[in-house]
Image (cartoon, rainbow, N blue to C red; front, top):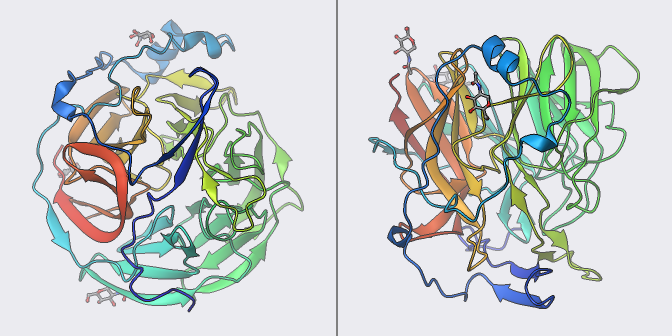
Length: 419
Ligand SMILES: *[C@@H]1O[C@H](CO)[C@@H](O)[C@H](O)[C@H]1NC(C)=O
Ligand SMILES: *[C@@H]1O[C@H](CO)[C@@H](O)[C@H](O)[C@H]1NC(C)=O
Ligand SMILES: CC(=O)N[C@H]1CO[C@H](CO)[C@@H](O)[C@@H]1O
């Protein structure tokens, strides 16, 4: 295809970033991540350890923490603490497996039994993939490549499976910071064939997407300009890859909009975890829709929907975490979340990647750090098979001392999980 040879491993961090520094003398500051000097070492900062709450049941927690619809009041203020710093956690033994055929950033992944279907994503900032690769956990090999529909988005997708059909909702169409499409598709993984599905009412970037109680739910994400958080929430009844209704139904808006959240159903509740408000936008007038950095705020929030169909807040993540939409699995009643991005560095303003694996034990509503990754990584794609946690793809850090993003990867790693 159109990918220039030898570009596979080109860093995608070569975004010229435009910081709208409203609070900083009101001046616009152009930074290039490649040339910005790395002037600190992570050891210069003390650990920011947030105490995880004592074990309580969901009911106890909600009883003592009635939200009364006032979610904004629960923010507790944001300190200029070192929330961007690495958190202490156990070192894990990592095993490097066969690399993916291509490197991917902002791709998507869905696990069905022993297979991890890996979709789309940027290869470089100027090239996006339009195919699916499959990793087989049984023999730890890649194979089974097939094409996506031409009209399907290439990144920032909403995606979920019922165990056979994969629903693929909206997303960004094309490289750099191009516009989104509302087009939506269903993949039958038994035949690897695609069908059209009811388009979302309006396009979104990286909306939270899940199947819950027979309905496909899509909420949040960024609006058409890629930056403005969308609060809207829609659902549509589905069965066996087909819509049972003609149009999407409007549901209760999400308390906080924006892209890159994990959206998980556990114990018959719908959870939306982490994410951010704001994102890179196309530079005005740029013919290639060149990405330029804008203000982003990353969150540690956890919201939950249950029978009442009202959003409730649960204990927040140990630190703000975004770019985790396909970076989670459920293991033994816990949600396990791998890597991501956190608050930008307060001085250098650089994006900071996350190098921890977090665990949210749902029965006790307790967060913990399960362990350290071999490197910090964002938008990584995660699976779990026979006791092993796997992750592949995403963008890694510049090294142990520099948590800002650099190389886009196709590497696969696994570690044995025990808890
Ligand atoms: C996965 O690998 C196993 C073991 O080699 C093999 O039996 C199985 O057919 C593979 N599955 C697919 C879909 O390729
Ligand atoms: C999950 O629980 C089962 C049964 O209690 C246990 O055998 C298994 O090791 C646990 N898995 C992990 C990853 O801890
Ligand atoms: C029972 C319970 O977990 N209560 C929590 C309510 O929220 C406060 C502040 O977030 C926590 O400190 C409590 O632990």
